Image (cartoon, rainbow, N blue to C red; front, side, top):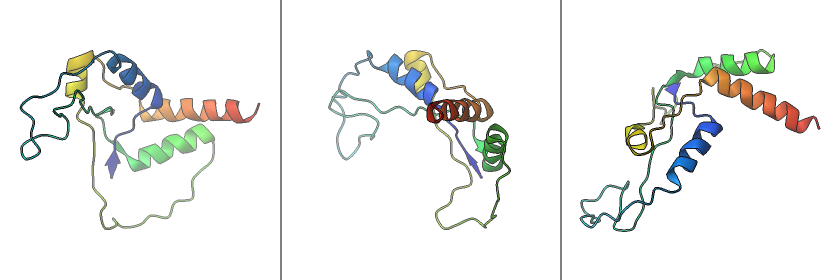
Length: 122
């Protein structure tokens, strides 16, 4: 299975770039035909994701390497409701603010573990 990994610094960067971009209301929007990404109110919804799905086992490996501990895995078959792959469509975000999250799962997990250890060992 694959999932997008999005590092918090990338999310913050996108939000900072978006904060001064005030969207116009969509005057053509109706409940029957409107997209949930727009509205007759002045707002827009943007995906902030890495758009680069990562195998869940790669995510676990990144955690193991950053923490220095081998995970005890209990492999299970796909569960009801599981989806093989998901990823964010970030082109509208890029078109608007010229930013696309890029932090890799390996770098992001390492950064998080380093921060966590520093914060909780004070």
